Image (cartoon, rainbow, N blue to C red):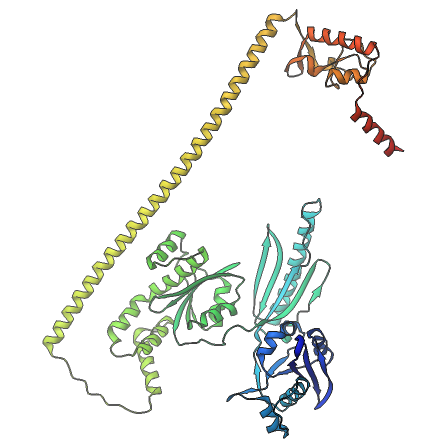
Length: 588
């Protein structure tokens, strides 16, 4: 087994020594890229370091490569054991009888490898027991173009096909996994599998692949947080799964600890996140048929699963969150919090009965434990019995306590006081519920008024726009009426009607008085040497395929053409000359 001793050297480089079967086969000082080549060449199984802080500061490229290697590599912090940290020089003197006040980096690397070979130090957890398989698009399609949509569809189909093959292999191998599909504009751009197994196990069934447009990579998930809960606080966790997963964490007393919504959270991520608050004993969802992700999450952390009798509506979820008085940032957090609070409400009566009847018997920690047992399905009596058994199993000595029965009068007075307080509490709760309902109603009315105000302004602007358009249309109709009256009055003397078929494409061979549809101005007609007049300059009105033509204008323009064209006067159109010259060059 090859062991690599590694120590930071000046200039961002590393001193290294490779120990294989007790013999140093290679040593030196090099950069991170060369160290990566050593890992693959000798198939190193253990990296021995003096301090992880040095590797984290200077060797992040090495740590990133470890996540993608096809086999697992252990990292051992040689100077740390169960008693704490010790100086490397002290360990070298103890194991090898070499006493030095300070070791140089090349010597440090050799001694680190040798000490790791003797079992010194503590292994560092760099990665979770999770492996990521990421199938993604390697290149982005260029914007626009005739082939853009076809390219996106082809790549999306390739990713879907590769993901389906990988999923089939994971199912046949019996490996637990989560699948996250990412889409853009309705097409798949990546598929991410989070497999709850080590990298070496996963690579037995799935291999990385690389092509021109799609790649599949396999790497370990970096370690995040502790492996277990940091404190013994039992929790109800609401989960709203999806592309963005919402999480809400409640205590068994109904206190909201935190809500969050993040993209692409795996079950492992959720459990690690919840463990910073305590132990999840119930996983809740807001739909009657729990999603597979939520069912697997509950089984993974050994918690009970809560589903409502029917799907919670958006209004119900909003009311539940409003009753808590907690501000949430997203709808995912709202749904998760509503699910958790609904689960708490289902068990609230049992919790209150437990506290009321056994609060003086059980300690706070035992009450918390009994609530967790109730959540898991035990009755109040069974939960109390188990909590007392747990206490007895922890006690190492027997304590006899003599309990005096309170006097009847004092007992009756206390009971009356309790009943009065309970009644007052019920009245206050009813008043609070009524105030919350009134507040919600007033809030809805305010929103309705705001909506009506916005719609009124939109309709007012629309009406003003239509009024302007109508005014412009009336003005145009008036103008056309005046033109039509003038034409009717002067028809037969000044105006005449011609059909579109009577228009000609003028090229110079047409008779004088023709009306040209391919000439815009009289100057263009003169320049081209045509005898017809432009339609644009003589037509006064178009009625479908008919034109009302000013006969006087036709005669006047015809006279102008006779004089200017007949006299040989030509207007040179420089733009047309240049265009014809360019076409001649291109044609040549």
